[in-house]
Amino acid sequence: MTDALADRIDRLRDRIARAGRDPDTVTIVAVTKGFGLDTVEHALAAGLTELGENYAQDLRAKADALDSAQRDAVRWHFIGRLQTNKVRLIAPEVALWQSIDRPALAEEIAKHAPQAHVLVQVNTSGEEQKGGCRPDETERLVTRCRELGLTVRGLMCVGPAAAPDESRSAFRRLTTLADGLDLRERSMGMSDDLDIALDEGSTMIRIGTALFGRRPAPPGAHR
Ligand SMILES: *Cc1c(COP(=O)(O)O)cnc(C)c1O
Image 1 (spheres, rainbow, N blue to C red):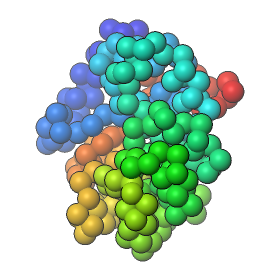
Image 2: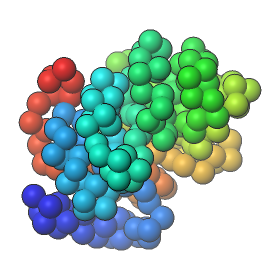
Image 3: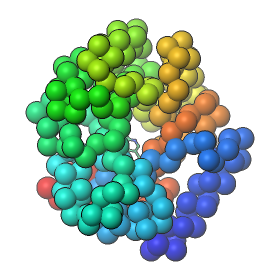
Image 4: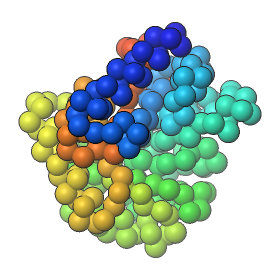
């Protein structure tokens, strides 16, 4: 599997280059949600060290199963909806909290992981079921995070599942917000919409399927 993975990483870097971007300036977050520990180990062996999970228990279980060299190498990104009562479980492991969508969550993170690095997640597509704060709440939430001593590295959004045109405008909205707040990181783009996201200025793509194939189980299913 490691060789197939190496090929997929090469192809992903080609896609980044074809979008007119320097692959060395775009962070690939390899999303291991729904996959087992073997996938995490293959990813690390292939040089993918920024790993994304969206269930706290799964992140905890995988982090606990790594050996000390792997633990030193990995940088976990939390990318899912997060209940405040789960923050404590994963606080020592998370390198970047990507899904800060409300003040209460920021407060809990500041309590258990002082000075943590975060992204504020914004619902730029306006879909009701999507996570993220409203675009007009972004600045206040960024300010609140800073008051709490958190380092806000940028913004994150999940593109609409619908038409590419809508993805483009949702990504453009995030870039405009990040520009206005002078925030560097724009975490946007998944396996199906990464080309558009890169074209719209993504600095961080979150990729599961295009690296590891179809997820064997819904994330969290093996808890
Ligand atoms: C699952 C997930 C991804 C990765 O999705 P793929 O389509 O498999 O690349 C990225 N971001 C978030 C927030 C996710 O939940």
